[in-house]
Image (tube, rainbow, N blue to C red; front, side):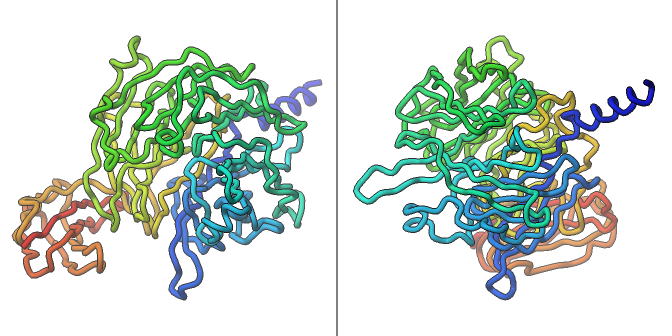
Length: 510
């Protein structure tokens, strides 16, 4: 009897939600290889301690449609760029081409090698009725000449028992909802209270309605529409923000810079939203379309704080405040950095290492990071350009459901974000004057004893490199011989196990 109990106990432990690592491998990036044909991206591997970011040769690159799925041990099963489904060794899966095909894609986006647009329009959900099956949920415009363009919510299905365990796309592009008033972006999902099925939520425009779908072992079912308590306008709300469930699944947040933050309670048993609250992040007269061009929302792992970014600014909302409006705190504004394009504050995703990563909207070589998102106000330690990527990102980060919603710990703080040799963690470097006509004085960080100084022209790469071989408080530099423009000045310590560098953008005017 004792051995039977031990066997049952071990089986139960192995099936706990804490084993779920569905979001532990991220794939992204788009950049031509040296041959002008191949595409080079990167992978984040959160199974490694420290986290590893590596160059990856891709079959096709990415725009902003990005999702992936790993098994319970964190091994990558497959990923998608919205136009294809790819195996862990970055090959096109059998029948994997043609995702989101149709007249719209053929006319407006006939470049599958670049992925598909839409920052929150695709995700992967495990099949509740098949341990080796997965639904790829994706949205695509459906175009007929002379008619209004509709958006379809489609499903494709991947069976991982096929092709010697590498997977096969069994069917693709079967729609389960179609309409002209479906909002672009905002596609998100959360596990049912039974820890098996899934709820899928998608807002509509020109309406005050949330579409609700239930994925169970028999497939995807349309449930009764729900009242949002707020009217979302097609020309300002669609494709301008994101939506996220709280890490414990009890709340749902949707945000864009026009409509502001909307918060709801969520019942994972019934799939019902309730207790609508609106929080103003900006007053209407403060909104500048040129600066506030996309809104993104994400939760802290402990579920206390909501972060709202909007191109120009980052705010934190403390949900423990009795009056939510009193909980709005300004964190930071975009610092104007070019890398080599404007690295504005764009899309946020909470990672398995308890940090929140933010990508700029353009083809930047860096990511911003909220290092301590569970802390109040600026103690959250938001660092712009914190991570240098091996190559160009495309303004996208993967879209995941909340995999660890039933786990006590929503992330693993022991995953240290000390990255591999190709990636460095940025700290601010102080220089003056800035802008300058040439002469500069650098305030050398207190713990910097010796290392390398680099000057980088954002158009031409590194234009100057020299060694600093002794401790000093200040260092004088003259860049007046260089053409007018924007430059990055960076310091790399010689003994640097934490891969820290110090950087600043300098304007040279003549």
